[in-house]
Length: 274
Image (tube, rainbow, N blue to C red):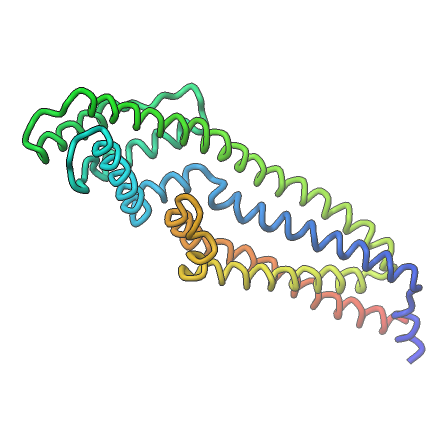
């Protein structure tokens, strides 16, 4: 019994500092894990570009773009019902070029094939030549969309987002190591350090796992972001990448449980030695 008391003895001051650094560690772990999860998914340009330019995301984006183009044509004075003015293949080309441009301002997006396809499809739908004002409106709409979305909007936000995920992962990792050092100083025993770090780690992992599971449910994500601009596309992106976020949370949980389990083995060894 005396050995047990000797092993567990720690001052209240040390307890307070250990708890303080544990809270800091928890915050840094959240930042690091979230940054890493985003960096592995939406923070990777190739993965994001491949997803939005294929499958359900491409279908939804094509639908939105064609609806916008039809509205533009109608405002320009040409009566036409909702029509498929751009094929999914052409939308896919624009999306991929747009993502490349968002990461490299020196690249350009060729709009001529898209304009020609729209004009041809309009001519086929109305069975008459497309008026010059309509052609001009189409050109302005496409140019404005590309400039405001891939250059002004996504072109500014997305590279910054990619940089933030990478920086957040690296900086949080470095700060976590520093906080671990101070936690080791205030815990006085290796087993206690392992126990506190392990419990904090798997607790944060469980919370992150629950959050990743919830956003992976399309109905829940739709309620959260459905009212945002392009909320339907964002919902598809979140649901698609949620499994990877769940895996990241799972790794954090396993790491925490492993550290906590090792702490009991180290503690047992200390008790035997004492």
